[in-house]
Image (cartoon, rainbow, N blue to C red; front, side, top):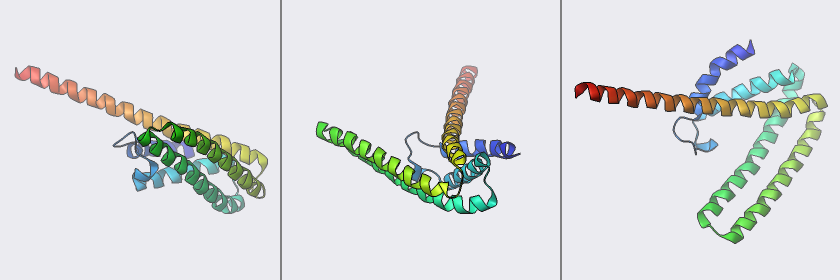
Length: 171
């Protein structure tokens, strides 16, 4: 049942998520598409974790807080990478390596802290399922984006071919 609903939504999400540019950051994406992806993520993770209503009530606030903090760490690294690319400075490259390691450590520390909090709400097996489900969900999103790009390329190729055929018919 969930998979049928999710599959119907995937094509909409894929279309909205990667419309204009390959280098768009999450903040530049269509807010409605991001909202839809977040709703799908919640449904997907809820199903994979098999959360009871009592668990879900306690789990989601903790998980959202964790996700927001993890997103901040990742955004910090992305911003640092952009600065290094602009400067082309070997010393800044070294600083980026150190920052990357520091941020990975902070992310690991964050995961440890939140895993301890989550263990009070869900089982260890559910935490393991959560980690797998997060990766699976990200792969589903990447696959949808790739599929959408391929369809756009195919449609563009067909459009160009049709234009050439019309040109040839006119001549």
